[in-house]
Image 1 (cartoon, rainbow, N blue to C red):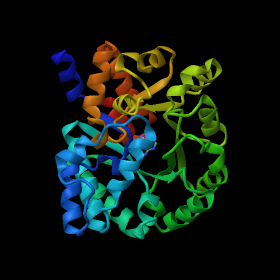
Image 2: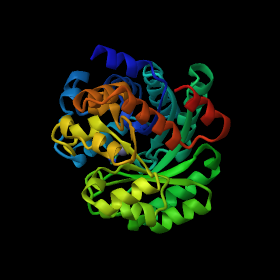
Image 3: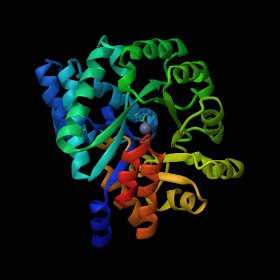
Image 4: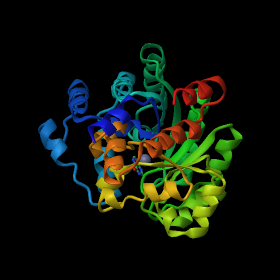
Length: 330
Ligand code: HPA
Ligand code: ZN
């Protein structure tokens, strides 16, 4: 087993499903809270970590949004992002496509500009000093209105060059993709690519909606596809990438045990699955931890692991020379 872990650790990897706000480690949260003179609801790092027990997505989201309250200045967003990039380097991640939730910040009065400039500056330093390439995905919070999504879309336009795609996250139940069909159409007119969380807690219909109403390039999660045979065939035929997050699924009770995770079955159905960490500070592990845990639980072979890693590079938004360089590493 150590050999398998070693095999996974040394592989160069891409990460495609990662919320930067979900990389907020309690230690850094306390540090930033102190300098911004904000009092956290928990007295210590340990007691905050103790609170990370979730029975469903919404439990987690409540804590996740509470954590963002301490992020105020551009430097805070820089530090948050830089902290992730250091972790990414330790995980041998050479390329990361990172989601951010501007509405979690603008709704508290933090200007869009501070959020994106802080994140972007860290990503530039990451490229220069750590040799990690990246792309940025701006996610809309689906529990908020269509109108609010249009507002943030407009706010993003001066920074259009920094953002590759728009996404859709937060509470899936009761907020189907169709709610954002017009926002996504507008985003595509502006030249953004699209992704969406679908089929995490929601039904296969949400995956169909992401495909045909939002015209996504990737489905984030997509677990419930396994309930719909025609959908499985369709996703396999068009080689639609799914960004699977094993430890997230375990912590949010999307699966009851990692040995019951559909990842291996999805691979065998010919689906273009990738492995990702989602919100690693909350779910107990970064990318290598996810890969090692799921490989052990499902007895994945080295060939299957290589396929997962190759899928990530192929499902990335990279093009041209860089894409060839990375796939050539495997
Ligand atoms: N699901 C939905 N929304 C999210 C998640 C997730 O796993 N992480 C951060 N926002
Ligand atoms: Zn996610």
